[in-house]
Image (cartoon, rainbow, N blue to C red):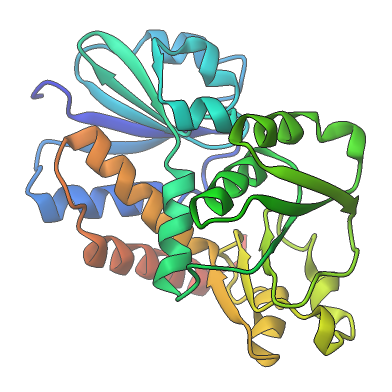
Length: 281
């Protein structure tokens, strides 16, 4: 196998990941016939050993929950953005070193821009985990300096508040389920089903967001996204975020740019359609 031709996505659970479909489609379109990409079940305890086992044939790793924060202490170099956010979702092996990046942020910015959301007047984030921290950085990138973050337990928002401080953003914590300000971009970073009650409430015009990004991508549309479309808001899928962050990962790992978005998108949508038609187990 040629040098630097292996890559994988790590996480727990990982079987549901769309990353293999996206990355393999990119390799095929780029003519990287010898490249492979797999999904590897890995928890926080297993991460140090797995990364240490990666030899010179490895190009990079994609990281999902719960590894984005854990990996920081295992890196030789961390880009400023990943350090500010407090999490890296990408490891690139280069010159015997482990370089950490966060592609969730540019992926989110690109997904919003593709949908026509480039200058929101304000923003509300649901959740306070690693993806919420990335959302803060994305909001900074589109020109915002403040954000409302709705959380169930303010005592568990320390990591998010620390990220906001590093990013130079002012955050107002509010209880989960509070009203959303009119015109805001609403970013839901919570698990499937957790934001469904927003779709069921009777929205008054003064509290309707103008755009909704739901990081959930299957099944799509989510109840929140469906409701947003019904009241005339822009609905952005978590699939678009996943696609654009994967494209940036491909560029970092292969050194080839731009990543082939069209075949990656087609492969991801095809895999989602296949899963939707598969018999329930």
